[in-house]
Amino acid sequence: MTLIDIKQHMMKVKMTSLASLCSVFNADPDCLRCMLRHWIAKGKVRQCTRKPACATKCFKCPTANIEIYEWVDALT
Image 1 (cartoon, rainbow, N blue to C red):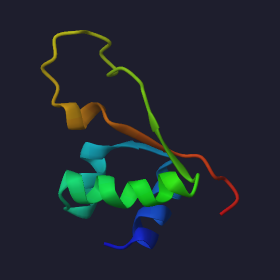
Image 2: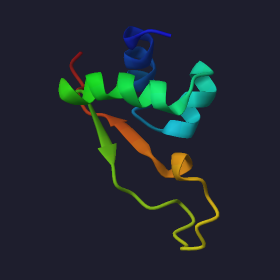
Image 3: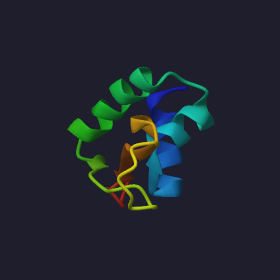
């Protein structure tokens, strides 16, 4: 897994959770967060502050499942 792999995946899916990225790349969440910070610093990715799709407050979902990232640079 490289930064380019993450870029290509994010460009394809547009928005995804950290849990999904971990599954796709078979990687540790902390490693992916570090790599995502590179793209965030370049203004290509942003971390979204959205609630889980169920919109409940039961707190049964792991935090990683609701950590959402969005590709925001449509030109590259």
